[in-house]
Every structure is written in structure tokens, then in C-alpha cells.
Image 1: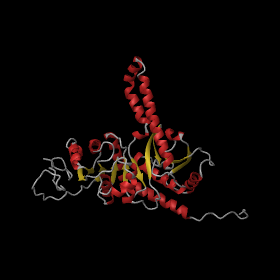
Image 2 (image 1 turned 180 degrees about the vertical axis):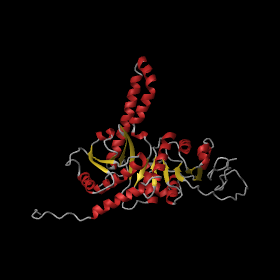
Image 3 (image 1 turned 90 degrees about the vertical axis):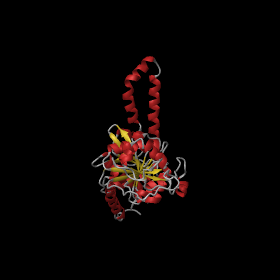
Image 4 (image 1 turned 90 degrees about the horizontal axis):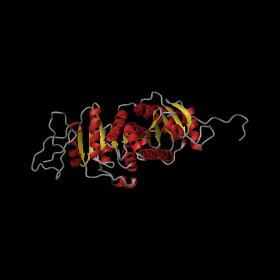
Length: 391
């Protein structure tokens, strides 16, 4: 007999057979009188359990890891209840703090955003985000289709006040720690004001998740000289200089500054950021493959590889920007975190941790304060031309 875990369970308590839909439970003719248990008074994270390359087989173990590591956090798992409950049965820590919300619908990894919006209502990712809008959860996490996740999140949660466009932020490993790079794919083009908004959101993210007290921010450019770059980048540079934001604006940075960790936050448009991110990920895989081939070239090299395996593994993870998992969709009226589609349980658990850190921070209030300062700067009249200046 199968029984859904639709209520939160605590150690030593029996699950309630609440929320069972007709035709899906083996309890035939049973009278179920209990109502769905109320959500516990703790931080609730909503999970799209069907998203990504692996679905519940990876996501439930990730929730189990998070449940063991995090205090006072519970989970809403959206997706196929039978598949989710089969995994929960093998992961008691996750089962103790999880509720399952059943749906048969899921968005495929190759579905176009417009199609996902048209047919996505009631899907696992849609329901996960809806729970944030309804106030049931503090944040949502999904490893699903990035375009669909962005489109559905914008449709349901809408943009935060004064924010024009969302941005996807990547946590990039560097020689000095972690640098937040945004945008890495939400927008092909960004004007000067949007770039400043990204700077504000990126600084708030780095402060909340990576612990910087006053994040340093740089604008990605083709050179560090004032006259370099296109008009939008130079105008954003002038705005960041003129606006008294609660961040430390460094100025222009170049591509080589990303790996150096010159600044805490690097701002660019989504076209450039996505190319930079994927180039770095490809280079990390290339170097790993080359090292692997080199160590297989002779018996002595293979013996050396055995002794160096641990260090090489650490180096590979450090070099890959994709290894630091959990990229929030910034600028929304709610917290949505994108996990890599192919993430393993440890990687997905890291994305959950990002969602928890953001939910427990003053992230939104910090953005609001800086956006008010930017709005005040933009509302000021342009300075009059100096007397005697030519028209």
C-alpha cells in the first residue's frame, strides 16, 4: 500500500494521509478526515522536484543533505508524488521536514519560454513559484529550463518596484574567493540604468550569500581607461560614480580581472556574461581532460596521477564556475534560485543554501535603499551648460 507524504512529519510522529487525490492512492474506501497539517513556523523552501536532468533521484537526496545541515528549514516538494515519496522513503532526514504537493505536469528542459508560459500552469515549477507568491514559502529552487523558469517567475511574481529587468547571477571561483558575475543570460542587451541596477542587486547578493561587508563592484569593459567601451557602459560608469550607493565602486575591469578576483561583483550584459561563463566552463573541462590525458601517457605518469588525484579533483572544482551552484534570478518580487540542470545532490543542496541565505538576509531592503538613491539621482535635472558655452 502506498501512502503520500503530504504533511510535514516530525521524528516519532505518524504521517497524515492528507491531501490524497482520487485515483492515486491504494486506500480504497477509506474515510480520510484529517485536513492538511499547517506549515511549521520555520523557513519554508519550495522545490521544483521534477526540474533538471535527474528529477527526484537527485533532488530528494539534496533536500536530505540540506535538512541535515540547516536548522529550522522545511520543504515543499512539487511534482509526481509517487516518485518523490519513493525517494523520501530512503532519506529519513528529508522525509521528516518535507511536504509533497502532487502534480502530473512538468516542463521539459528544451521547452521554449513562450510555450512554457502558455501550458505551464499547474506544472511543478509553476506551483513551486506560486507557493512563494502565496506566502507559503520564502524562496523557490529549480534545476529546470532556465528560459522557462525566468518567464514563469516574471509572470507570477512580477518585477520588484523600480527594477526594469531581471538578472541571473553566477558565483565565480577566483584566486581571492568568490566573485558574483551578472547578468549571465537573462538579457541580451542592457542600457546604462539597467547595468547600475545589476550593480545594486549584485552587491546585495554578495553581501547576503558570500558575506562581504561592503562589496566592491566593477563594470566589465574592453579596457580600464575612461574613454573605452560603448556608450551604455560609459554612461553606467558615470552614474555609479555620481550616485551615493552603499557599495564600493571600483570602476572598469577587464576579462582577466574575473579570475583574479579584483572585485566582489562584476557587472555586464547577459550576452557578454553568458559567453564569459560558458567559455570559462569549457576551459575548465579542457584543462581537466588534458591533465587526464597527460597522466595516462605513461606508466610513471599514471602512478603520479594516483598520488595527485585528490589535489587534482580540488583544482578542477575550483576552476569551474559551474561548480559553485545556485544562481538567483534577481529583480523579482520574491526569491527564485536556479540550480544547474546536471547538478548532483551536493550541488543542488548548495543551491538550497543560497535560497536560505537570501531569505534570511536583508537582501531586498538593501536593494530598495540603493534603488531609492539611484531614483533620486536620475530625477535630478541635468546641469545647465556653462555660460558662454557653444550650442
